[in-house]
Amino acid sequence: MKPVLGHRFLVDRRSTDRTSWKHSLKFLSPSQENWLGSRADTVDGKFEPSFLRARKLTGGDVPVRTLLLVTALTLAVPALAGAANFVTSSCTTTKNKLRYDCTFETDTATSVAVEWDDGTTVRSAPRSAIGSTHDFRLVGMRAGVVVNWRAETGGMLVTPGSTVTGSFMTSKLDRHEWAALSLVSTVVGYSVQNVLFPADCGTPVLPGNQMLFIADHAGGVVWYQDPARVTGGGPIVALNFTERGTILAIHGEDIVEYTLEGDLVTHFEKGVDFTNTVHHDVFRRGNHLFALSSVDVLFSDGTEQQYDGVMGFDDSGWVAEWDSSGLYDPYDSTAAIDPSTDCYSLKDCRHTNALWVGRDDSWTMSQRTPGRVIQVDGDPSSATFKEVLWELDGQGVNGDFAIVSSVTTDLTFEGQHNVQFLPNGKLLMFDNEFDPYAGAPTGTGSARGLEIRLVGSNAVITDEYDTGWPGGDCSSRGSAFKIDGPSSNVLTTCADSNTIQEIDSSGITLWEAKTSCGGATIAGQPYRAIPIELP
Image (cartoon, rainbow, N blue to C red; front, side):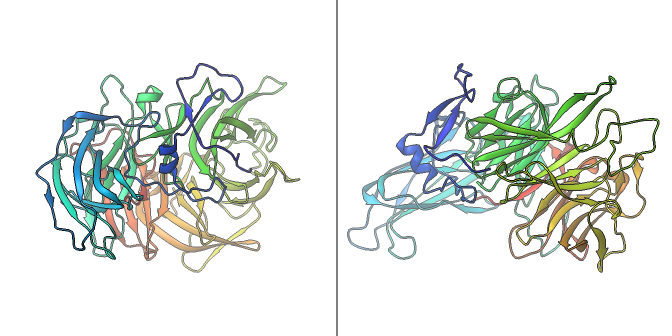
């Protein structure tokens, strides 16, 4: 699908006019356009958020001006005559305890750079545009610590300017916000820096509500967001970090998307913006969002079955949908099952649990029950639109590929999750080593991450990341994500055992942690844990 070009806009959820795309469009002010910067509204466009500028967009954090926490400021003598000097400097907390808005005014037009240190990590902001007022939003700080910050005018390295310093203390988190990663072990050489994960730490009056958290490599939470403010509460059933640098999730029955600065930029509501159930995965490609969905199909003999599909949205709302009802024969309890054509159960035909959208508009999906990965043509201009392009069978028997490898003797995968394509063209998945049809571990090995390269008629397993956890301990959910950087390591999540691990291709666990709430075992399993970069 091609993106819709034109003005940039945000969805105004306050509108009661549900005609057309069921939204009114809130066009961005010049200052908000400045935040979006030079982003190209194309499928391949890169969205580079400034992370740190204060903004007051729909659903975002509103600064609480009564909580001014600025210490004595120190102005240095400009290194060069005529360099800009700071006139005023202030940092103010928002409603979110781990986000601060800082404003700096200078006596002449210049740019400003800022860095801050919470005692664990030093972070920095992109340099501001030329001007006399400079707004930043500081994120990625631990709770209950002193944060020291430093700002400098001019070119930090090329043209030295004046500097100003200060500090503030972040507030302690409430009980329901107090999630963490409890480290089990670390080995020299680990590369994970920040981990995004969902957790339920007992939100008041909302039992079962999961919040979004980011913890640093030492386990301390440095970012949180409670989508219940707009969705009404519920579990996180899908989670992704997008190419725009935003956090995209299905919370309860709604789709939400947040910037790292805490602004709500997308909210699609079930019953208002769409009708089918969304589940398991949601993905952004350019100006389009895609979510796995399910629909109940009633056959002439009275048999009802649940088929999975895909729904597509652009920035204004629902666009199109597809379901798999025409791909498989109805379930027949009296006949032998042909896994290439038949459904495995009455209500949950394939249990699709992962979606990856390629730049060629293809949809790659994981089907947990039969242990299959399929790719569907998602380009509406194609002659083969909505047709299956290929199938990879976890047993290497019924699909289009034979599974081969020189790095492992286990040439099967079962109950897989989190299937995705890497920039190098390989397929990455989490192999649960659990047969959902039999309801038992396969007994062939531990749950693991797998990298697979599709070459001709072969699916070549090139890398294996062994968690050491038997399939019975990773039976229902899990994930595997590449960690950005020079290492080739993978961050795996074994949800049933509440374990997150960084593993290298030789099978060595370099970093391991379990999610917790105030030091206690977490309530609710982490659906996914995603390595991300903060400023």
